[in-house]
Length: 342
Image (cartoon, rainbow, N blue to C red):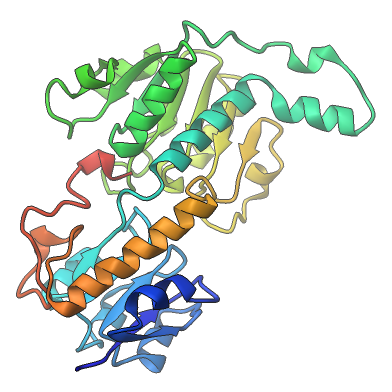
């Protein structure tokens, strides 16, 4: 039986989960690479790649992997993989679109509650030796307020259900969801960003990073939010123009922001790090013990399907795929949700 070579490009320091799935058919190699060039230098004979969010894959490496059938992004977003280049080469790119829905939705609500209820200023003040109820002054009542969701796929809809339980009115903007989708969730729908933003006391992003969503919240659109609005981003950092966000916070137009993602990771902008009205987490919204195991298992299973000749379940580059090197089901759609890939 032919034995394959599966390369995990980055992030992982052990491959227990991947080997448990792939051991019968493949050897799993951990590169822990920090530069794209290391992939070709150290694993030019890879039959498949598993890639995390720290590694960018472009034509420079993909074009020099003649045996590579598939790239599986161990996560949801695929903005770090050149889909066009992979498709032109016949390399099928897949993601794991359904592993962290609960975790990211929970984290979004966590961040919303934390900034609305002034959790961090109160905690820090007490740790510093004080005890001042005024630290919580300005906290709004949530019930009856409006949460606007930009993107309402798996995670956005899970966030909507959690927000409704808190008594929030939920409105959504997602041009890629079919008519009536909002009715199943029991939320309201806006067909234009310019309509949803003025109504949103809180706005939460749940969209992928695409040319259309880069800086989807810019200075002009932030200005459309009500005075004292709150911004939550667990999607992708560049979906928000951070210069515009800082200006809106400093002017008082935006009350607080909570960011799990930033444009450049690890965070290298001290304006963001030190801002008194920005709450930060280090791109961990996706994580739970169970969620991480699920993500890695599903990524390895997708690689297994690509190698043994079964159709992969979540191809994301079908629109630009020529002469695929592994079997795909044309109706597959890990990335077919447009705004809602997150």
